[in-house]
Length: 614
Image (tube, rainbow, N blue to C red; front, side, top):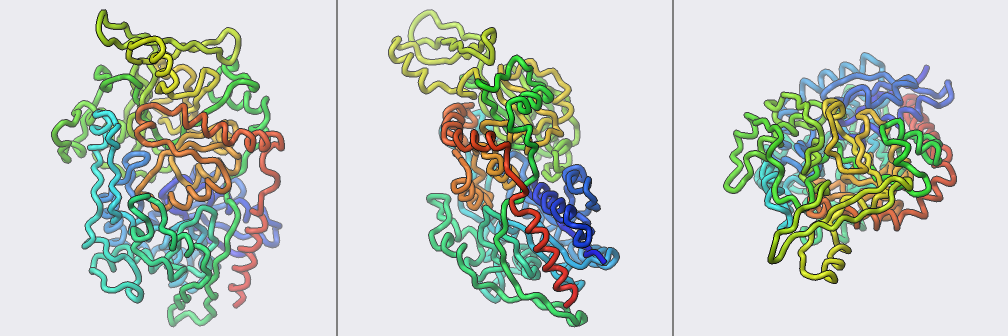
């Protein structure tokens, strides 16, 4: 009789869903006598598990974990995140009753979880083993909301950027709310709220029996005695990097003991174990690495054939889940386009000096994130319920839901003033994908003398390194996709919302985005150099950065440079550093085989079968 697995998937982000779907697909492609039945349960929508559902996975939608609130692509709302956690735990008993009943109804033999603590806790109550498949856990993520590191705009950011950031001020969670965030046996005493919050997440993970530790991992407090929570203690706030002792702890093998089954369960509990496992990532097609296949893919998503020459054209993929760019040289956002207000945002005074028009416009953009998010996991104010039909581009902006503003190159020259120190525009015309294509990029610099002006051109603010580059922007809503986008910078194209990201990443020469497992894993799998903008309040980032440095190419783009539209230098650096590895990957037609995925699936089945018989 085949094993029955319940696979719990956090609804927090893209990476959880992609790796759950990848492992589920490997399990469902095993030989028939070993192939388990798999039930995926998640608050992420069904379509993100399409790969595994196509080969037999069953899907159930349920609210099985709280999420970190991200109103912007690389910002965190600490206060709302804690409120979300409290609300979830308030209904935890009801959730646990439903989950334990469901596990019994489907006859589950084992629970896999990435990284929803409810799955491990429910498995223990039912008396079946559980496997945690992850590179981090949310006890450390919620604990890190107490870090003293504050996510604020840089001094170099334009004042309009400060207006944008003022919408979501970053204030550390008070220590009396999240202190000391650990096991009472390890670090007493605790406040009542702590025991009801982060400690409950930690205790759920303590019920897991096997940890399949994915690449890019950080400490897992529920399996290892060191380092202890609170997780802010793991990071040096002056460098925003793990402390040396935390790095050393990642190599330790001493484990915390098992949590026993309830007394009514009379079979053996597995001893705890940790196994490092290979990269879990969705497959790419061989065609996405070949020149004809790349050309066909790009044409299918809207890039004209005339703009892509496989021998010359370079492709930048921009994937934050939602981005907003502001034009270089533009003193303020263009005020002419439509803006709408939000009751919820207006409830939080912006403070002196804040651009109220920008506040109103961003309200509609946050609405898009809530209504059209790919995973439906971003929690933003409920009052932001109107759908926007505005296009993604204006003369000064690309308005894509998610990240703070970044600049967009002007499309026409700026007239110099008659006298004094003037601003002049120097058109730089370069050859494009074909002999008949050319692009003029106008740059503003001080009219001092010809020599200094020429020097200034070396440091010009540019989105792309040259006219031989095209950019594919992801994360756009259906309404924005259907809108007129005539204001897009030359060479920028909008990907369909359902574009298959592993193939698009393979087609790309460089990817620009935020650090997250899904994007990092697909960049490493395809050897696509990655330019990333840091998310300082996500402690998972420390493990992902180390992984990218060891197995891929990563170049950090400072947030002020991202927001100024000054991307070209980092893109060029990443492309140059990763070019040889990318060319080798293309020459071999992508990764060969499944890189251990089938072997991992067999190991999971064998382990679960062993403890079913026990």
